[in-house]
Length: 407
Image 1 (cartoon, rainbow, N blue to C red):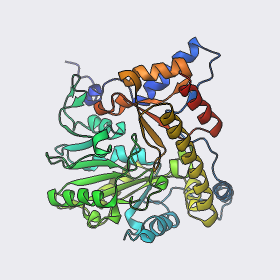
Image 2 (cartoon, rainbow, N blue to C red; image 1 turned 135 degrees about the vertical axis):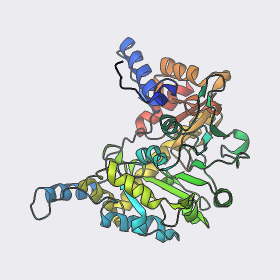
Image 3 (cartoon, rainbow, N blue to C red; image 1 turned 90 degrees about the vertical axis):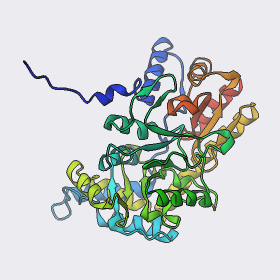
Image 4 (cartoon, helix red, strand yellow; image 1 turned 90 degrees about the horizontal axis):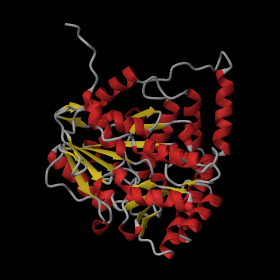
């Protein structure tokens, strides 16, 4: 009998296409039917402001170096160049009182990839917990691996995933689960709700994880947008976090690197699961499956931490947060129930008239020409909610809110 190649059947458990692919398809179909319509996109969290001048200068200098035999660079070191890892350790962690060393930092091409790939170093027997609503990559990557069980269409959940509801009643932050997970995904400031967690509350999660032998996978991609003093920028600001947490960071939203691609993951040397250190496992995975972010991009990343680079990046973040204020205040004035937008570039709003998330998506697209993200795409508790981003330019942001207010 002829033996045929087989697919990874776990992919067939994924319901539909990736959320943002579905949005893109619906927008393209609308544009084909309405070729003259001017659509304003406040859906996908892509930045619109150009790379800061200090960073562009560093990029140009690095490009010139690549054209000179004496300064040319080939493959990057497995963990990333020391010049970048050292400045990250100093500026992002040591100056905040976190004892993170450069060799505990793994440079990559973005937090999305690392958040999706980190599950590879853990057993398939591990039980995963996620916030609900949640960034889809956390769940989907575990589905692909075969860790989530079957999908229940009636509940819109996977049977073997622990969903932690993030509701208006709990400030859109999860409560400690009664059923103990092995891997806990947390994202603060949160995507999609824009919620934050204060240090005392995050400490409870660290204590819980240490008590039960769980690992926290902490996505801090939006930490640069934090404006309140008591909101931690890193989970390592909490006592004991180095013994239970992995942290993911990104340059995408911090410095507009969505088109350059740069991020990093922090794995403390002392962190263990089942008595085994995780640092060597991720180092092995990183060295085997990844060839490193380009030298010119890592030099650009270094420039983010320079005095002028930090000043210019903060100005861009302030620009986006001013957009967030325009969206938040405008929608509130129009009678919408809104949250987020103060420590994060996302605004989370309740859909009007008990519309489903996708009904409201269609309504905004067809009546106002504005694209957002349906909350149900982030999980069942995102139903009847909707996400807008502050990453548009000022003119489009103002116009989009005026269009919505006029409905």
